Image (cartoon, rainbow over all chains, first blue to last red; front, side):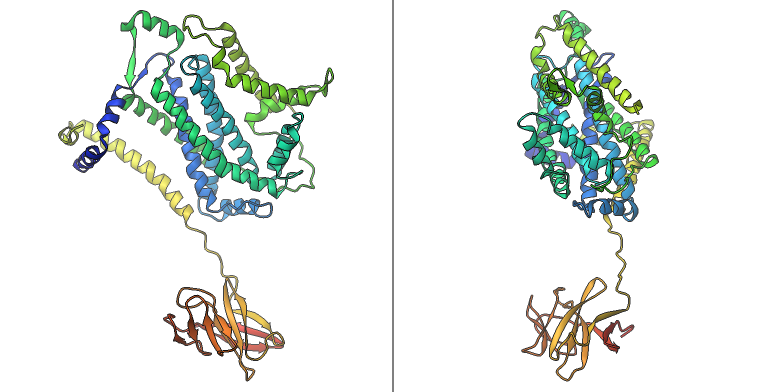
Length: 361
Length: 153
């Protein structure tokens, strides 16, 4: 302990860490019966760190390229010691991260944490959500197996449906007219360089906003606490909340480790552009609700192509979703009911369509 | 956060719980570190060369010339002397591992990286190489020039 104390004093003398500690001591987290929802953002961040670490490890052996990618992952899973585990953790953590990001988003939505003054926190959070889905989509292709090949073909084809700009976008993503090794090279670049850079910057902004503004309280409680300040309940961020958060991380790690060890991620069959798509092919679960919508929409709606209509609708909904806080009232006592209604509808639409997509033949 | 505060020993029960917690976290950390360290070690690549390799055909190499051939995962150098006899060496320079070449004008083995020179027995003659090149055995099998590792030599 004395070594740590001496080291701390040495650093403190030079960097004035006591300011930061004083700031951390002042920082509080509101305590109420829904407080545990505050953990999901932190767990998502934790899983992202795991993604970065396991991703770096996989980079030691992975080789992008149509003739090498599949073989290199085969090598990782069969020859490299604990390679199967590292890859499995990377794949499971990706899925858990998207799940916790969704849980975080819906909790923010239902607790109305997005409203003034936290609009920008919501915007950066939504941008992070889109990027994380981009991570999922680009990473899915890297093993270069049949499922990945067709998922990428369909995914980029969907982008190609957008009128006028669709085709150039599709060619940009594919690196040509078709999904080939060139697509793999691009997706690899997006996955390990472009997206990590963007996400890191956005996470820094997102956390900066949270630090600056403190943690939101649901509007009802906010009204109550403003009227009667003695009813206010808070816990200190450091160490009380942080230790609870660490316990949540530890639990998340346990779940992740168990899933990765008991259900190692499959590699599948190597992609072959001249083989038919296998029956029952589906995208990853987080794209299922959109996939299922596309399947249900008729080929022609009035005079517009059904596909085009759905893609445009999703793009528009995504944009409005991003700007949602700007439609909300800035009075905690006058929350817009339609936004709550929309949130409930979105929640049931996404979960319902996802389940439907799972069960549908 | 003073030094005195940090070093103050707590009651024994608290100390016990701290050790339990710290030990648990340490064990967790080690259980993560172990697979990661094992993952970092590249699996051994089997040397597919074996002890013998066909370095070329008799017609391929002219007198007073050299040829680089594959011996497992490393290069070898086959030389045909002016008198028609063959010699073979490891082509990896003993200095810093560059691949050497036969210099027809000097009738010597030369490493371009740091100007190391070996004679036709593989002995380091001048420049930085600290040791002679490894010498391989050569024999003919029909029109094939077979190079073999000399065990214990």
